[in-house]
Image (cartoon, rainbow, N blue to C red; front, side, top):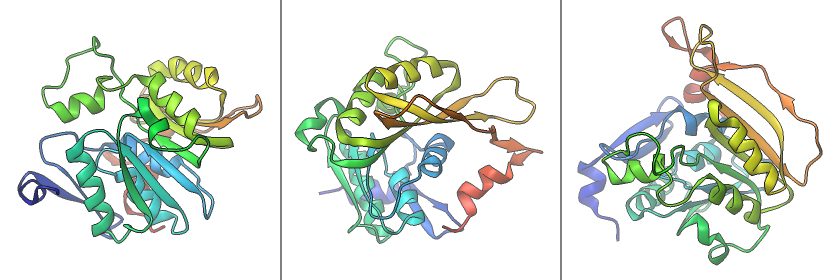
Amino acid sequence: MPDPNFFYHAATDDALFDGRLLCRQPRDGYRFSVDAVLAAHFAQPAPGQRVLDLGCGCGVIGLILCFRHPDIVVAGLELQEVLADLAEDNARRNGFANRCTVLRGDVRAVGELLPPESVDLVVCNPPYGGRQTGRLNRDGQAASARHAVEGCLDDFVGAAAFAVKNRGQAVFVYPARRCNILLAALTARRLTPKRLLPVYSSPEAKRACLVLVEARKNGGEQIDILAPLFIRQRGGYSPAMRACYEASP
């Protein structure tokens, strides 16, 4: 049973879509960022499709997808119990309990939780840093979410390849400077990159900071490189980024 003291004293409620969507998340632990918001908007599920959010955290990707696509169902997979509790609570509080469920477990054991090729679309905001890269975040939740403590990139890509049906899609968000690692991991699992969106912090930035990649299982060779998205512009969020937080579905 979730601890109500945590929900009401150690967490914050953050609004999306002009307050029409509320996401409760840890006050001091792992908190979602623009990465997750961008991934949720980059994904393009069709009506009636089944979506899997790998490493769902507090469930923000699933919440955005359910809000924007009222005819889909979403399952989030999360290892950390506190975050899984939050994801379930968020789905219930936003009225998505019948369309958004949470699976508790490790991506490395996805076969114990889901049948193979059982979803149409996978969305994933995987850990970015290895155990030996950078300073490990002192907060346990953030460390597990930001670093490969409970699974490396290849584990998440492998889970996506296992779960998604043939010709289904997988969406990943990853640091742009490590894009080659992501593309190699996807290709090795027969997830062929089909759309790539470079994300820049601002129009003045010389290098992209993130990439969003949509891959298709057993897809063809062609890939579309999309026009860049800028997070900030003229001192605030760019129109494209602002729309991700404010636009109606």
